Amino acid sequence: MYNTPGMRLAYRGYLQCTPIPGCPSVRVIVHLPAKKDRECLSQNAGGAQRLGATAIPVSSGNTARQITILQDFGSDFLCCTPSYAMYIAETMENEGIDTSRLPLRGGIFGAEPWTEEMRREIERKLNIKAYDIYGLTETMGPGVAYECSEQHGMHVNEDHFIIEIINPETGEHMPDGEQGEIVFSCITKKAFPLLRYRTRDIGVITHEKCSCGRTFVRMSKPMGRTDDMLIIRGVNVFPSQIETVLLNMGYSPNYQIVVDRVNNLDTIEVLVEMTEEAFSDVLTELSTKERALSENIKSLLGVAAKVRLVSPKSIKRSEGKAVRVIDNRKK
Image (tube, rainbow, N blue to C red; front, side, top):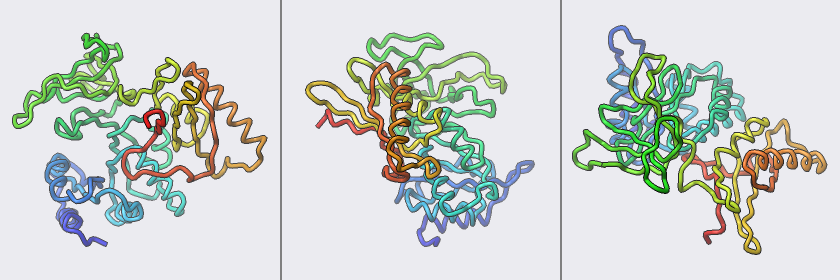
């Protein structure tokens, strides 16, 4: 099982884990890019190790191995993309694993947009508390901003970064509470400094003191990306808006948006996976459910979308960032 240099290194660290005085031993399982186990363990897991935790880099992919390590090492926290956390939860459910019997207490998720509805779904399926983290490869990776226990936005590490919100069209500076593109400047990075780096992520910030006592500026969960935004017949559409509708109506967050152009008219089709419990071969029932979803999406977005309910597990899963949009107009 533990036959790679990175895995053997992590296992030795796990066995030698000695917490700092006054802190319980915490074992953290970290999903890191393949073939970079040693490098990522030293760079991205250093903070966890300083707290007396053990970071276990298990590389991407091979979900069965991820689950085995969660069980064998008794991991307390899981770090990965939210869509992959959902996939792990789904796989555990299929294998009859009771997540309430695992030591897993929390998860730190990021690297892709995700909604509050998806957060609640992950928490329910994995029986954990889910926290958001924000980072950029161009800056330092994860850890640019993070959620505290209050979960009223992510605190930006202002001793390293300056954050701004600008109008993505004009570059105009936006005040607190106004939605716009997130811009970062690095103030401690030397080899590769970044000044007013446009992230293309959409969000808002506030300088109000958090109820946790921290005074760092807080940023919202990214609401999407300027390059993820779809313009359908003149209407701006973000995948996260459709995800909100699906989860609020009790559907799984496994979906795919297919955009096309037919006779010079943009069309949008949403493929939505049904759960095993809700799946029905009765055509009339499927048509009724599809129509209800389509009406709710049109009500929120202001643009008509065709909805097609598909069988469970028919949409390809990703062990990294989920592929939510297929835009055939670009071909």
